[in-house]
Length: 632
Image (cartoon, rainbow, N blue to C red; front, side, top):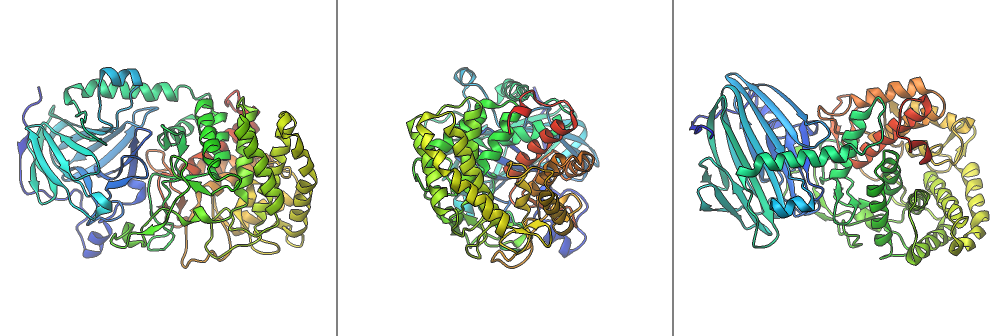
């Protein structure tokens, strides 16, 4: 039995940051790098270093963020377990899991908080019922005495409404109205103050408190059972460690690769196999800027890179599940491919502005949905064809609908390859003749023709060999600037870091002088050390942005394939230091301050990390997955 906790008053905010009004304003929002994630492959919560859960969408990744302090510190909800007088905080994940351990040392003692969402097998769920969604928070005082605040504030409808708290029994509270049924289970006495349910307590060494917030879409709802928390945590750890143990990569960067793989798994919506670009919306690409997008959606562009990354480290089932989602989704709009879809492959993705929200550190507008869904982006057809060819190459089979899709992709590329498009970066400055898009159109036809060699129903696609060669000639004639010895973003103009993929998709070999010239030009003009900006061109929006993380990993891969392995390794290891303290990456990084920017964590960034680590292993001969060299 735990000893009773002692109530106290006079709570002081943790840490010494109370020096000026400017510091107080800044500290309303913590740095993006201060967040870790917990999840269950259906939803993800962001946990700050200070102990506050500031983001959680229900019932799934793209649902209502009932905890949204991340994008509005005044109106967004949160779930705080916040020690007073903190001197030092150290946090880590239990190895090969997303179970988060945070240790706070205070002026008077030390406390450990363990955060996780239960992850059980279907059989285990039948014998150990858990809520539809659940966050478990376990507090243990390790030495001395520690004062802390426990406070739950739920704000549904993107922060527009408060919630009512109703006591069901001494240890159970119902929270209404949430779109579903929400409960807080707590062994300590809590009170309602306004729209906050909480208390201030003092713990002594050996004291323990377990709390859980459960959510179900409909009644009857399973309540968290706190007496089973030890068992549920043990099962969750085993679930994730068993999954991580299937990773076939055993090279020198295994910890970073496994952490990235776990991050991708957490961002995979288990019921459909879809992978969201990120679990957040509107985290800015520059503080105070307008490039704030909703990434809680699934981009087809990610498909080829994701499937390649997962296959290379042994996760064939996950890679093929994503391919199956892709095949199902694209049938809905075939032969037209949308840039992005919802978790269930729905095509309707309306972009809306939520003008009542402050935005992260005042970065407006806050958006939900994404208007890029309606853009024509030629490169997507190539990336989908590349993903399907890889799926087929690794044992995937095509039914008649899939074969029909491949034929449709080839037809669209052949008919529309010479049209301008919005390009990979989804700029809102209008359509252009993007060289990268033409490269990927070539990739698309090349992969479709490859499939025609083994699929009799695709034999007619050989007729597009001439179009494929015409695209190649166009790129070499219009996309290459001989005077500067570099490929350009559009004919004769600017640079685009997306061109780093030219040797990665086998458009040209890495030792081709034109590839070398392009890589070196990008290093000179777009790179700041190991960090690489996306482009030098007008994207239709004011202000700046950070360096784009996956471009930095593309540079590593390109250099490795150019046999500049020492340089590639140095850049890669410097990029690893850009991860936060628990190994997570955002979309962008400010090279000057090192601040993480953009939605977090970013699937594209972790996909880039995995692929770069594997490519380095292949080039240097370091230990890698046995299958890595077979997946290109």
